[in-house]
Image (cartoon, rainbow, N blue to C red; front, top):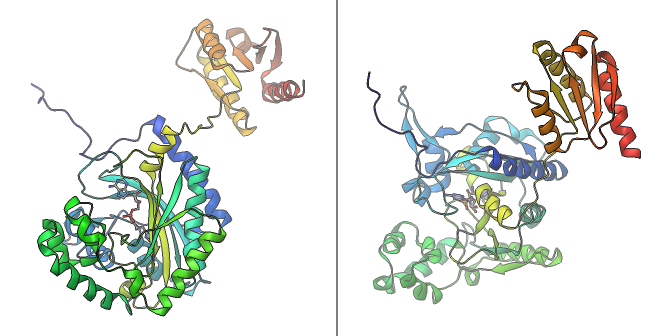
Length: 431
Ligand code: HAM
């Protein structure tokens, strides 16, 4: 039968994470785990699919994410689900569903995994990408905002990302923002003819978003727009003042950006992004985005729980790690076992397991038969010792241990082989 002539490819904007890329994910996860455990954030994983309404309500109906970028599906049971475009509403749902409200507060959680947004793919912007997310539930204090920023800032520094700066702003709260919105809308209406078509729409649905429009046409209008910082209520003003003082005390470089509003509906008070200023112009350079969202948990669980958090774009950070020549610490094998014959192959597996239990990194090539070729590989790998198990060794229940630096060999009984190898490695370390 003639085979159809088509070629399968990964979906647009989604890519395979190949082995050479996995090492960067591992490095990021390791650093994240280290920080999370040190600063008492607990790991959580939530389903990739959630009720569509969770994001419609949580992220916000008028946001680009919900309006244009969500992957929505109807199940056979007529449920409307969405592939998560972010973590924050999922973690808030989980907080209530799993009774975390009864835990000692603040409840500090972290998670890492894929998220999905139907965006126009370009460098640093994908349809499936990964986020590392930290959230704190139950603290109003400005120091909580700072702890989140501090964590991401230091994680990025550990990953050798250079020229970091925090862009920061306050977008007020339900007390002061409505009045500011009125002032802003009044101004924007007077300038409507000078706005791009998207901002003309935003003026009706989400006027604050006009402030971070990148269109040249809108830039002049924005530069003369009233600023939220001039309209904050006393509580928001005090909160923001403390946040900036902490940033000064901790010597975290920051840029006060009055136009930073972020694209999600739930923020109150502090919003921030961490950027690397060493990237070329025009690149998608927000590595981390986050802020305080004191009203979201009320929307989801009807309880007044203040919250704050942020998310790091893993692929964007990996791109910079590669540029900065971040050294991936790859463990190199200490031992190579060369074998000949079927029985020797099973002996090799047994010995590998003994060595694994002793934390001795071992390599073998079970699908190869020629001893000469295997020893060539051992040479290339630069191992300290090669173990040889040939037909004779199988019969005499022994192995040969060869010192690769000078070619000297000793024989050891199979039962004692792992112990002998350990001693040899130790002896070599001492000498
Ligand atoms: P966000 O700014 O939408 O915030 O995303 C956080 C980070 O994810 C961005 O700074 C960027 O590094 C990365 N990112 C976003 N979109 C893409 C994309 N299409 N491709 C590659 N990377 C991308 C949030 O998601 C909030 N949930 C953050 C938060 C947590 N706020 C409070 N808690």
